[in-house]
Figure 1 (cartoon, protein in one colour):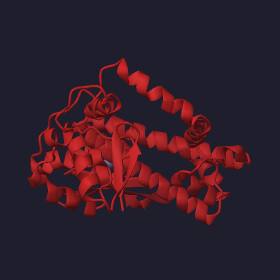
Figure 2 (cartoon, helix red, strand yellow):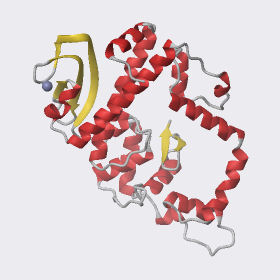
Figure 3 (cartoon, rainbow, N blue to C red):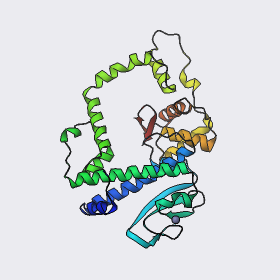
Figure 4 (tube, helix red, strand yellow):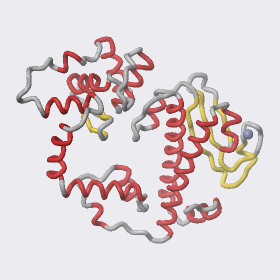
Length: 306
Ligand SMILES: [Zn+2]
């Protein structure tokens, strides 16, 4: 479902002020994340799926997305770098020099001088965000209601709760997550039981899995060198980890990338792209920063928050 700009304007008018403000803010944050993602991927960073723009931007040195301005109509008050009047003006800022550029999306490539592949990735990301806005507007217009059964989960994810608080419909991907949580809630024992045998028949994907395999099969084997001695986080990195946690960087994967980029930490990686540094880092944080709570983010990342 894609609406024209006129249709979208009309449907937005049917929402209340808080709903419109929330959707605008969500779109800008989404664009900021999509832009940072495209820039970071081009530089070869491997990012966890749910990294926030604050975290991704910490890895970048050049352009970061600031905001979108909407004049409501094509206006001479909002112009592209080349002088062309715009309705929607995008602004980016250079992280190192502080230079600000303002442009219409069609001239993203011309005025920023960035790679065509990055431009395509940014546009694709922006399109996906528009698509989700249209999904919400279409559902709101058809008086969409959520089946309350879906909310029978242990914890409603905060982004979903925010939609509910604003009286806005959920996206299909959010509903899929609720469905997934419900399934896990119904059969937790069954899923647990499946873990151990599966591990024994396959090579570990990375060090985390390898470690878990070791823990599962410790009983009747020769004593092993404690893994903590083999994989310690170098002392010289400790203060930098403290600094990143203080700055609110939550993702262990991102902290690894920052240690590699800014402090010359070893850049060896598993085939999955995960740095060898990952496990020592997690162990270090969990042993030395117990005021931070760990939350697993799938198999590939851990988040630490006070
Ligand atoms: Zn232009």
